[in-house]
Image (cartoon, rainbow, N blue to C red):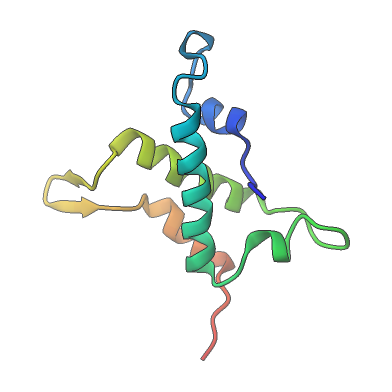
Length: 105
């Protein structure tokens, strides 16, 4: 189950109506991949813990993390080099994941 809808991702990317559905397939793949990547980093599937019956709603921060990562991948299409720093994932995504990650020792 996707926690971020395609219209929400397009809104984040500031798509206008004239773009239409030209990149919908790509955006769908990036959305699914971003959620999958975040779930692997979290150590759990988001829908197993949030959004279901008798569960808390999906935290807005996790929705934003998926949105940020999918948009980053859409905009960059490869690892970005800023000055002398290589950024493969936006810094905010890592912060959000750390807040919700289940640590085990």
